[in-house]
Amino acid sequence: MKVVKFGGSSLCSAEQIKKVADIIKSDAERRIAVVSAPGKRSANDTKVTDMLIALHVNHTTGLDTKDAISRIIDRYQSIINGLEIDAGLLDQFEQTLIHHLDTIKSRDRLLDALKSCGEDFNAQLISAYLNQIGVRAAYMSPKEAGILVTDEPSNAQLIESSYDKLNHLKESEHVLIIPGFYGASENDDIVTFPRGGSDITGAIVARGVEADLYENFTDVSFIYSAHPGLIEEPHAIREITYREMRELSYAGFGVFHDEALAPVFKKEIPVMIRNTNDPGIEGTKIVAEREFIPEMPVIGISCDEGFTSITMNKYLMNREIGFTRRLLQILEDHRLSYEHVPSGIDNLSVILRTRQFDGNSKLEDVIADINDKLEPDAVYVEDDLALVVIVGEGMKEHVGIATKTTTALSENDVNIRMINQGASEISMMFAVDIKDAHKALRAIYSNYFSEIKG
Ligand SMILES: Nc1ncnc2c1ncn2[C@@H]1O[C@H](COP(=O)(O)OP(=O)(O)O)[C@@H](O)[C@H]1O
Ligand SMILES: N[C@@H](CC(=O)OP(=O)(O)O)C(=O)O
Image 1 (spheres, rainbow, N blue to C red):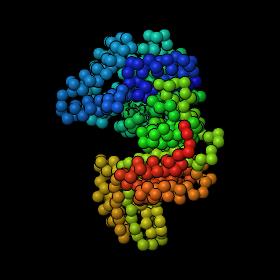
Image 2 (image 1 turned 180 degrees about the horizontal axis):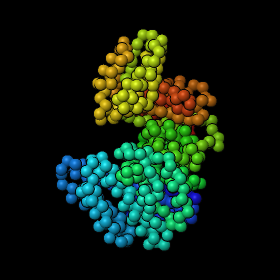
Image 3 (image 1 turned 90 degrees about the horizontal axis):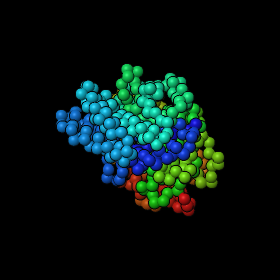
Image 4 (image 1 turned 60 degrees about the vertical axis):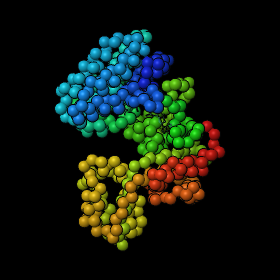
């Protein structure tokens, strides 16, 4: 059987939902569909999830919520009208929003409950439409399906025992329509995954029912070797490994959520990225092992912004037992996670996502702790870093990747702040100034892909 996931771009209007229904109908193996909230219909449009977040902002700041609710209901109304299904659903949707606003007192919990409505309402109306066109479909909430998650608002993680319960879904006589992006905690609260998390739900369900294939339908036909918004007509990848995809999606390939790989890779369930607007194209397959590693060592290049590095210099650092452990303890005390730790004999840097300092953790406090507990000769901080990451299983077989890449960067006047090679040797990271990020990506891309077409 196949589990299919449709992203917000595939479900943004009645017209798109009709395409989705055709895709479901055209293959009897497609027994479970995980759906997102309606996404953008055009570049300037607003995703329903963002409208729900705006509603939360209005409510918590004491502003009027009527308009925000109307805007959300209008979006669903235009879909319901276009599909010609029971408009009674709209009343239920509005009542649900009002009920959450009136009854949930915790700010975080209210935000998660509101955000979940985007996918929840969409799943209900898609199920109604499928039945109307003769498909025996049934809406099923994540709770009923068995998606039990940790109680971390906006950052849920699956509780492993969920897989056993999910397994029974394969016996359903209906095509199940499950809202993506959230689960239920042990206390029965709604908790959402990080943004883009419907991909995660799809992967969890695919693993739970031991699907033969997880099809992820979106608005592009392939995963490309670089973001199609940054490189014109980038090379289309036909096959990519879980490991390669994990590295690339983590560092900017937003087409598939990096956390969605964990459930499927353990059971080696293949994932296909496919286009709702062009379903005849096979798309990109994510697998455990590629059939052949081509001559070309690099499969993809991604870039992501918003990093800060903290560098410490200390003479004879290499002789000081426990230096790194104490540094990591400081990060743990401040509830910070890190991305890379490039090091030399007398210096060490940690690279972190800058947004972690938006909350309770303050950069000044971390630096004060480092000075106090590690007594370095010097500490300095660099903000506004971007990371450009090159990835490929074939990299470890090839000599000269670093030289080829640094040459491309220097020829384009890009100053490299730091280099780090992953221990698995399938990725290499170059930290550059944010202002140089796109130039760096283009320079490296043309170095590896300029002669390859499509
Ligand atoms: N390397 C890449 N290959 C293909 N698409 C990419 C890549 N990097 C980023 N994207 C972007 O990912 C988008 C699809 O992901 P997303 O917006 O989450 O879709 P959905 O609405 O289906 O969930 C594409 O429109 C594209 O702009
Ligand atoms: N709707 C949620 C979850 C999601 O996965 O959406 P999309 O499929 O549009 O990326 C979000 O916007 O974050």
